[in-house]
Image (cartoon, rainbow, N blue to C red):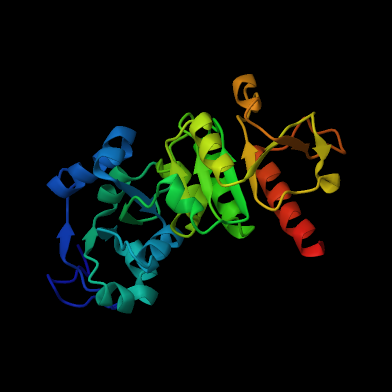
Length: 283
């Protein structure tokens, strides 16, 4: 491989590599490929974060730096700005051929850079301990891209955390992780509980569970948002199931003013989370 740095020497971009991986059949790569499967991810408590945005946030995470970084020659240049922090935190980096990165990627066009990161979810009591005023709850959101976009929206809108219920997509699915654009490393999150368990924990902490509904409830600009709000977004096709509606305290809707059939679930989350913040700032 032209320009491949020797073992332990500094590459032209300043990143020090621990080794070179030539083949997708390499034992390390074969082990990491298993992280493409949900059961293996959760057993190992690790996941793959692809692309410079996700990798840079993984590198900077205060308590759990990635197990390692793998890049090809194109991705190597993207790491230049992070060489010092990579060295300071002693994060192993491996240079690999393009086909090695392709074996670990589910993207149509692999970006040539990924991190093997440690899962960051916490139990719900730990997440609620700081008493964040706004939480986002994903109840049976099945599309990984939508779920990832919701994480990004919740982070951008200043939510204090996100709860991903057990029948939703896997938060650590590679497509979900890419959709978060690095926000998975910022936003406190809890996974794996069903809605009844979530409702029990939230009500003990005096949260009002307010669900977005396409037709029922008060329009979002007229709604009086509780001091501690858990905003619940349901399935993309059929919303909140009836058995979960009994757990809710209220419903709110974003009116459709044009001819669109509905809003995407992540778009609805964005509208409502920013409306919560706007209303509180005006209070």
